[in-house]
Image 1 (cartoon, rainbow, N blue to C red):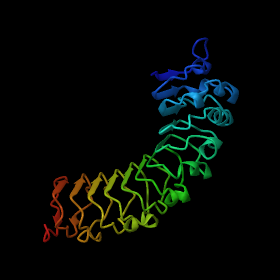
Image 2 (image 1 turned 90 degrees about the vertical axis):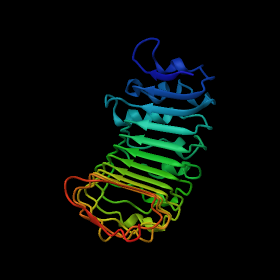
Image 3 (image 1 turned 45 degrees about the vertical axis):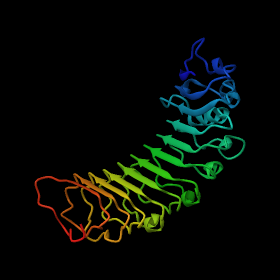
Length: 284
């Protein structure tokens, strides 16, 4: 096990030092990839031969390398076929590598994209059959990919601090957990939450642009709202959420009233300022 390898432009710290270390197991994080200058140099790492790796993180810490060079470097960092978890951080290249849909790993169930500029197109299609968890954090995308609903194995989706995303597309019916944190999403109507019949957890934090919620699925068990100051809850029908077990509302200072709540609730947490909040508790 190695853990972290920092690439430097000095002898003994080049990416080629990983060439023959093919017995690596567990997780590996390769940082400072801005110091790799070509696809040929990336190929020297020989990542595809490290069959014991289950988790890989590829990280650019600065924009020192041009977007085209970054694209060539990522193309050369093809992981082993049995990789289970992949994180790409700070990538500003114009496209994603061909190995994401051709000859790359076939069993990735967790994918995390952090501070990446290009929005994934068909490249992500190679992970569709087994991707269970997808986290998109601090990416400058204007929207999520339209093919999200075709990720038919996706169970958990986290969208964190993606300030440019204005709306959500249709989401896969396999989804069980959805988290929105620090996003400026204006509309959630297109994501058709009520059709997500397996959705159990919905967490919405610091999303002040969401004015109202769409219809929620009856399968929902845990619902959390935090720091959503402009949201209206009065028109949100919650009484039919017969699986709902916990409801947490924290620091949502513009919510003055709540709708009727279902009998299934076991935990109800409400944290507000000095105002008096009213709600229809006839079913509690």
